[in-house]
Length: 142
Image (cartoon, rainbow, N blue to C red; front, side, top):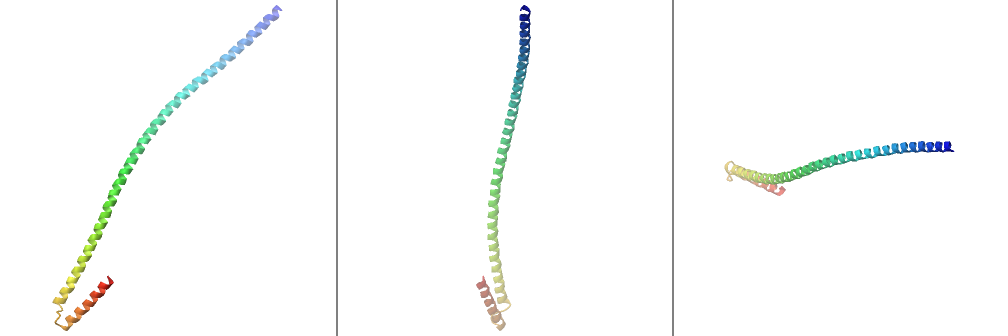
């Protein structure tokens, strides 16, 4: 039995040695996995930091763009108001010019009647009457 016992002990020792070697390999594999996980976490932290920096930079750019947009809109509004004012002034000037042209036209007609066609002559009276009729028709249509 002594020989069988020693073989059993030897077998047990060999099995235990193999189990220990296997456990050591498993432990090393888990250590390597843990080390890789730490490296990944570190890389993810750096990526997160970089993404935050990019987001901050884009946020600043967006704020600048909003400020520029608001400034451009206010400038556009001021230009629009100037345009409207200029349009109103143009309409007023156009009306004044139209009135001035009408008064000049009437003055010319009066001058022609007085100078060229005196009312003492028959021709002068006929032209004066036709001018009065024409002017009255023009006033009605206006």
